[in-house]
Length: 79
Image 1 (cartoon, rainbow, N blue to C red):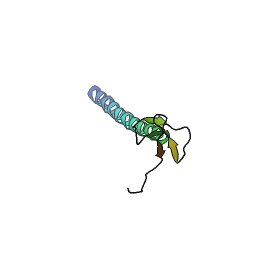
Image 2: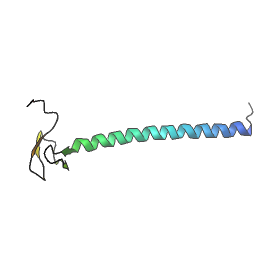
Image 3: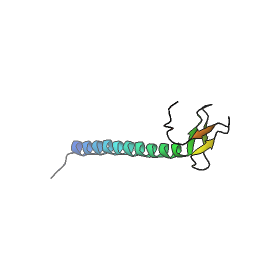
Image 4: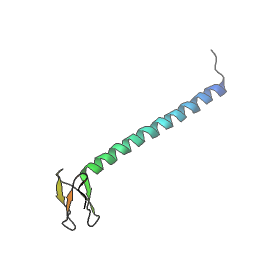
């Protein structure tokens, strides 16, 4: 099978396009994983809104700014 010069260039362009799509896809996956790791160790204070890093993953932590207590996970109590 003989390829012409235009078919060869078209194959290069198509391969480059697929390479860019794969690169974009893996970048999105990497960013999601990184955001998940950041959310795992950071906390937002419900009183002052400051975002701070937790030293340990404890159920109850104190905000370094206003000393308010913040509960890890969803607080399902109403009222």
